[in-house]
Amino acid sequence: MPYPKGHMEKVRGHIIESAAKAFRTNGIRDISVPAIMKGAGLTHGGFYSHFSNKEQLVLEACQYAIRDTISLLQQAADQEVKEPKIHAAIRYYLSAYHRDQTEMGCILPALSGEISRMSEEVRHVFTQEVKQMIDFFCGLAEIDYSKGSALLSLLVGTVVLARSVHDSELSDSLLASGKQQAYALLAS
Image 1 (cartoon, rainbow, N blue to C red):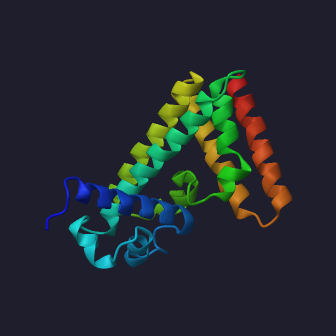
Image 2 (tube, rainbow, N blue to C red):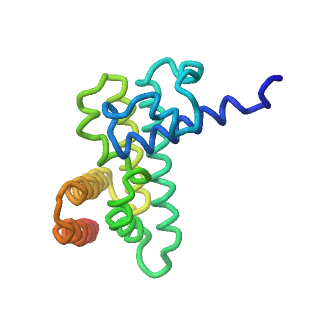
Image 3 (cartoon, one colour):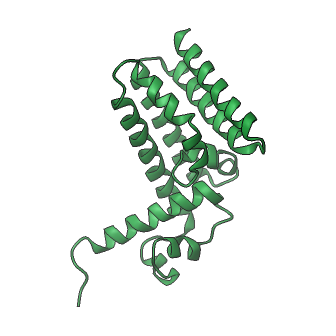
C-alpha cells in the first residue's frame, strides 16, 4: 500500500527537526545520523532516501533552526505592548530559559565555532542564515545593518558565555549585563 500524499515531506520534516535539536544540543560532529533518525522515531536505514549525506541535513537543519528562532523572537515581540518590540526579543534571547533550553535555542551560539571548520557550502548557508537574523533585528528595531550586526554579535556572544560558565550566578550576571548593553546599543 503506498504512503499517503505528503508522507515523504512530513518524514523529512521530522528528520530536519530532530537534527536541529540534536545539533543545537550536541554540535554537528558529536551527533550521528542514527541518533538523529532515532530522535525522529525512525531507523537510520531510511536516511538516504531523504538526504544525500549528513552535510545536506546540516544545511537544511540550520535553515530550519533560524526560521524557528526568528518565529519565537517574533512571537515574543508581538506580545509586547508597552516597550519597543525589540526589547521583548532581547529579553527572550537573553533569558535563562533560552540559555538553558539548548535543544530549542538559537543555533548560532551552538554551532558558530564548529561551522568555521566545515565546508564552504555549509559556511555559505550559515552565512545566509546569519544575515537573516541581522535583517530580522534591523527590521524589528528599525536600525541600520551595522547596528543590527553589533546587536546580534552581542546577543550570540552573551549566550555562548552564559552557557559556558560553570557558575550560575556569573551566568545570570552575563545575561543581565548583555541585556543592559543591548539596550544601550539601541539607544546610541
